[in-house]
Image (tube, rainbow, N blue to C red):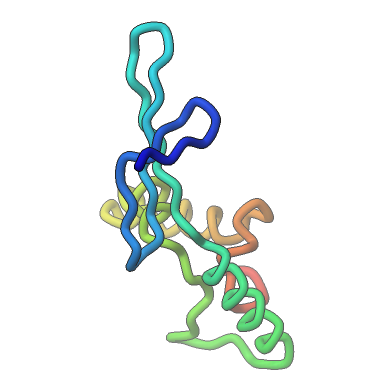
Length: 106
């Protein structure tokens, strides 16, 4: 059975993680797209963030929960290089707010 989503064809699905890999052909080239379900992570982060509103910030406080695909795509290299400024900037960026689990500025 072939599963289609527009021009995309599902080529792999991991039922444990929900990850789906899709393929399409355009202008003689093959393109792949990988979808990761992050709704549960974002919902958990929102709950944790709201619970942190009356807590104090301290050492060892978890400030974010980031899906691994995003970590490896956007943060891994900075982490390996010890670039704390970039990591803080990324965590404080309003565009990445969905991954924060604690209020305040890092």
